Image 1 (cartoon, helix red, strand yellow):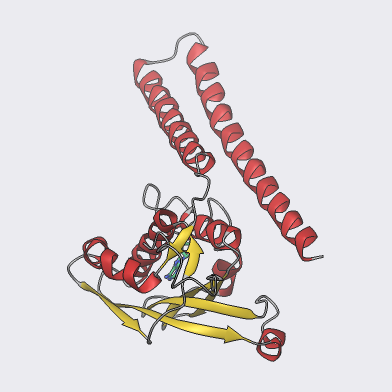
Image 2 (cartoon, protein in one colour):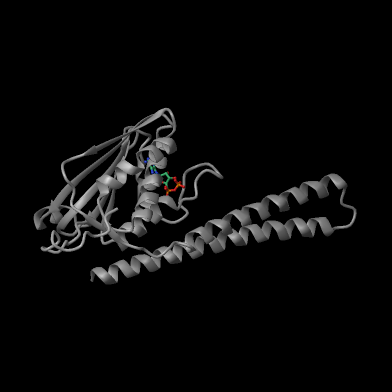
Length: 257
Ligand code: ADP
């Protein structure tokens, strides 16, 4: 049932994506066609022609942007998982994240003890974390603190029963918190949808959280949003603990990131 549900959710997302994009392209073509028809009318003044040409140019630019976003989305790479020490990965990303956050935003990393290893694609995990930090920065208007907390979390069946979206098991949890504007329910509901964005034209693509969701689910994990409008948002990623063979100590050292 879980597989069927995941599949139907995927199909639903694809349906929404293609439906939304087809609709946007239709609007663009309609604008171009209407403006060309008006220009073809005899006796159109140069002023009006210029205005219509500008409308056409705007529409073409919108179309080009839409198609480049679609390409970026389609080009998502296959995963190349390896055994990753998440704490180590984040320490190495520290200056990158700090630079992405900007001078007025402080990125704090808090790790509780030794973390379990996780089997994930380190490059894609880096992309996801970078996106989360950028979202946090934007939500705080480019000023404040982003906290990234790492811990091990054993979810037993009782805890999983309280949170039906999470299956029992051992997870490494990465929680990215900001004290930004938060998400109202209608944003939270749609946040994982491809191309859903509340950011101004040209700023957001609406793909960050949708890619994060895809990556985490493909890695066998979960992603959750907790948000309070006016107070802040925490995005938590749960990555399954990797099963390391019992004789790992004797075996050749695995490719740890
Ligand atoms: P983008 O950042 O390009 O808009 P995302 O998929 O990353 O695309 O995010 C979708 C939307 O979710 C954002 O436009 C914003 O409304 C909301 N959002 C994401 N992260 C946060 C956050 N940390 N705080 C508040 N809102 C957020």
